Each structure stands twice: as C-alpha cells, then as structure tokens.
Image (cartoon, rainbow, N blue to C red):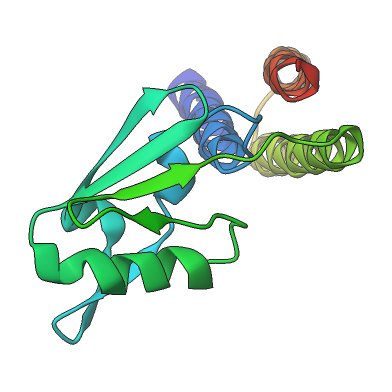
Length: 187
C-alpha cells in the first residue's frame, strides 16, 4: 500500500511541476518592457503555404534591451514575416531594412504596466487552481485507498503530506509572480 501512496505523491508532484513550467512559459509572453526573443514565440508565418513558427524560418536576436532583430533565412520571407508579426496582436511594428526586420519595443506606460501585472497575477491564480486540482486528485486517491483498506492514520498522514506539497508549490507560484511583477513595474 505504501508504494501506491508514494505513486500518488509522485503523480501530484509531477502535475505541480508541470503547472510551474506552464506558468513560466505563460509569463514569458507577458512583456516587461525589455526585448525578449520569446515575445515572438507564438507568431506563425505563412511559409510556402504552411503555417510555421517564426523561429523556424528566421533568427531572432536582441541587439539591445529595447530592440528585436529578425533575420530571415530567405530574403523572400521578409514581407510574410512582417505581416505575421503585425497580425499577431502583440502591438509590435517591424521595420524592414532590406536585410532584416528591426522591431523597437515601445516603453510601457504606468497604466500598461499595472495591466500587465494584473495579467501576471491572473496567470498565478490559474497556476494555483491547477495545484489545488492536483491536490484534490491525490486526496481522492487516498480516500479511495482508505475505503480499500488503508488505515485511518496512514490516510491522514498522506493527506498532510499532500497538503505540505501544495503549500510548497503555492509558495513557488507566489515567488514567480512576485518576481515577474517586479520586472514589469521596474522602469
């Protein structure tokens, strides 16, 4: 029975780890006023009739903190890439210099910073809901194991272990969100 409980703990921890990974990937999409190649990760380009990620048809670099440069591997792709970036609703306007696209990242206003911080907090809440769902799944498994013969003491101990795991991951979520908010609010 202990192996089954350990499996429930491991599964809950794995789900919580995935939640933190997902949170981090979602937060990279929220720009903090600094140029970051990850900002363009969701841009899809029409590459000879098939929709392809921008990173697969061009190099994306940050020459400085306020600029992104997109160097396509084929010059013919400059126009489709520029169109894809404009249509991606990221609020970015690429400039074509004949060789590459240069994107100046606009400074964030105080109001926009507060909006982005609010969005980051919302992502944090989604992550906490996922952590709680993992806790609920593990607790449901423990309750069914208790019905199948797990002692009451072991069930209570297992639920406490799951609760400690939940607290740990909620603390990690809070730390990640606090760091992102700090990045966003720093001018």
